[in-house]
Amino acid sequence: MTRFTDSPYERMMTRRPEGGKETSRPPSLPQSHPCYGCGNYGSPCVG
Image (tube, rainbow, N blue to C red; front, side, top):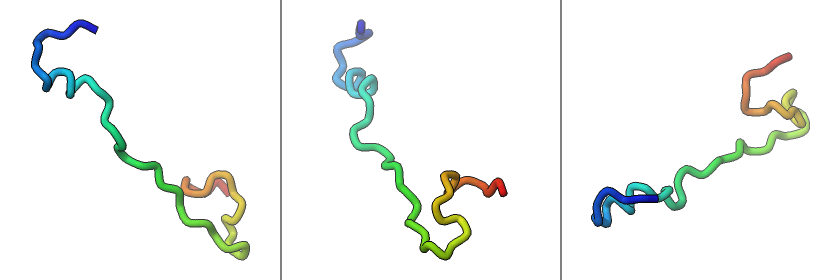
């Protein structure tokens, strides 16, 4: 990729951020919970 300048900041701004936001998983539910085992857990309930 061609750079417009020799500035180190330009190289820094075109890189992808390291680390970033981690995808967190909701805590597991007990077997007595109505949503236990549902594949849509974390999304609105469909039924």
